[in-house]
Length: 340
Image 1 (tube, rainbow, N blue to C red):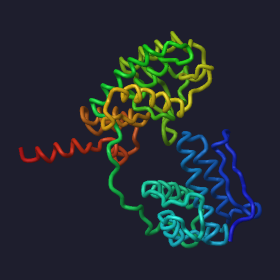
Image 2: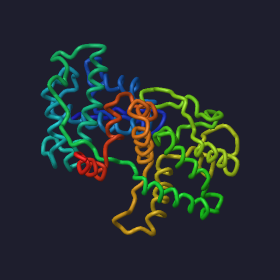
Image 3: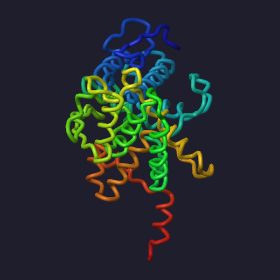
Image 4: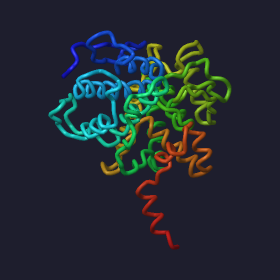
């Protein structure tokens, strides 16, 4: 049994729209009511990637819930419903209920969705209990192999730096903004900033050797030190391409705020330049998060987990594990030398 209409909860941008099924004005007993409260209080204002992921997770769950349960009563959300939802996501081309994405969801995607729903359930329980208790009681994540290393080896990084030098010299048209691109690359590498944090930087946050009051995950704020490589690169970009007016720190050639997609496009150009003279088996894949992984692991290897956690602004050491993971080559070398 499906819902008859859609309720759209809008934020300041189109991607902040949450589309929920409904039949009538949601009451305080409706899961749609609580999703609306959660969206407005806990999701809106988060980084773009977080909003996009939570939108996908919540819309998927509430459609499943209303179709399977046949009601939007929040008290019908029980551990059995959560387990059924987990199994449904893992199925390819499920018959009941059908979904737009017909392939089975990857275990990592399932666990991310469960994390979103677990956070939502805690939000509800902080105000009122579920009649059947915690809908996640006895419901765990799927067990998956730890994700592999997503950073860059020393050789890959040297090749990318050389490609960056080449592109800076070759990009002699004004609209290409090579000094901005160079500043973004070095800032991402030497600060560990996420792409969402880079694009949201404002010029007024730049002061001396620091970026001040940079907003991170969980509404955390930090002053970020700019390295002796990143600092002059930013100043060169400001002098040659941007100017010193207020507004976004990293701008497009038309003066608007640069987007994550534009950063990724430039980084793919750097990788393409590096790959142009390499055999196919040595091609490098580059995105902003790879630079964050690389910088964080360098701190981990040279200064230890405490400094790496602070550098990456992780909320727990558990989050640090994927950044400090060994590459297959490092693990092989470790085993070979285990008894030396």
